[in-house]
Length: 183
Image (cartoon, rainbow, N blue to C red; front, side, top):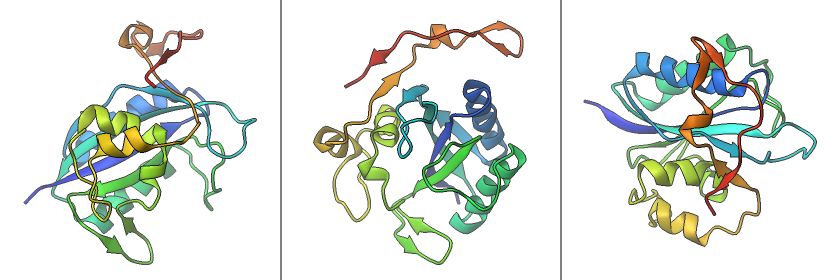
């Protein structure tokens, strides 16, 4: 039996575009993946840190929630994310298990749905691209409804694919991409 898990992917250190793309590719080893566009997002927390690149993936997987979380944390460690985790600071790679079917779970290591996903534009924008009608457990509203009602002032810009194409195989084109505001 497979479940639909939604995973937030983000990075703001090193080469975030390469890291996010590599993480999305690594998720394919865990199941079938459908990824949103990439989004340039204002950081939560310290305003002096670099802006993030974020995406959301729909992952059709046979893994249960806890083993899936362990795999996500393993991917973060392999990318160089240090332990212990620093809240709201810069990230080499951040993978958050946002939703897992309609499961509501609260254990020592995992809370589903993610307790703050509905408060974060950098999660809701790409999630709405993939599943606007998905109803959030506990909240009883669709992702689109949550996004439309959100009053979070942090800026989020969808990055047009043309600005993400590699200049050479394995190399991400450098330089600033123009900002395309979605809200």
